[in-house]
Amino acid sequence: MIEHLIPRRRDFDGADLIFTMNAAAQSAAANGRQVINTAMGALLDDDGRFVALSSVMSQYAQLTPAEIAPYAPIAGDPRYLLALTQRHWPELTSYGAGVATPGGTGALAFSLRNLLEPGMRVLTASPYWGPYDVLTSENGMRLATAPYPSIDGTLDIATWRTRAMEILRTQGRLLVWLNDPCHNPTGRSLSTGNRRALLELLREMSDHGPVSLVLDFAYLDYAREPARVREALDDYRAVGEAGRILVGACLSLSKAFTLYGARAGALVFPWVTDPSMFAALSTSCRGTYSNCARAPMHVLLRLIADPAQRKALESEHAHWRRVLAERADALDSALKREGFAGAPWDGGFFVTVPATNPRATSERLAQADVFVVPVPEGLRIGICGLRASDAAKVASTIRSVVDGVVHPVA
Image (cartoon, rainbow, N blue to C red):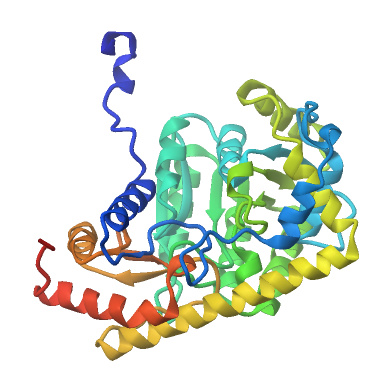
């Protein structure tokens, strides 16, 4: 029935690299192999079991039919939108203009649909989360990149300026997706100086046309130093309040509440009062999926209404921050012992190890039962699924692959 598909929709393989690598790892494990699976972006304990935060699931179990079954408002429950926004900026009394979305991915898609025209480009840092490519192409747009700071912390502000100015000149507007703090896939965050330099550049660019900054937040609850996250959010708030740049945020409960499958998120512009923004976003909701699920909205509302449960959630986040830090530090040390530069980590579920031929390297690692995700700049390793005790094997296997001494498993 291929003739029923329009021609430009006929050449996809339908596979997602991350899920494909995870499936390969699970298949190898099912066949009795001793697998180290760092491909999937979900939090696992040291026994390889899926982590679901108890404070969250206890509230989910108490939901009533009325909190699950009826349609949610098309734009989402306003109380949910405010509560989700206040998880990031507690001092705000309004979420501005915003709508509920199916996870942070839905929020990213809506930022494209409402802030750019087909054929335009969105600027982001490289390396980036792979589905950015799919999101832009599915909306008839393209991705432009400028380099994320190297391990030594230097931001190539000149390249950022060149790319931003070229985009503004050719399409008359600029949208920047910024995944910071706790960047996926590097696991690093912008330093104070780099972040403020980038924000100052965007302020300069706003003299030449509309500039929008959409912040892609997913992993902030798993930062090594929460105080640094607070500083970053305060910087973004200051830029949003100033009004020269449109500042929005893609928010999600997927990682924060381990509710990946609930698909609960939002796109909010907290410092926007123009009703046309809300009208545009809510129209996107109606024309795409109509309503998001009501249940996860009420989980958040229940949690914020219960001080004991809020404290329990904070305690769980603190525990997993420590676990992730231990895993990241173990891998960083192991890589350095093998002669690599290491993989410093500020937060989130991943680190990236540079590699000259990432796909071929990842395939050879898989032959040795170590599963990672290749990205153009190297190997994305999910510390969310890595035991600290396995870090040495991961590092030594990478070393062996680079040196060309690993052979396929019989």
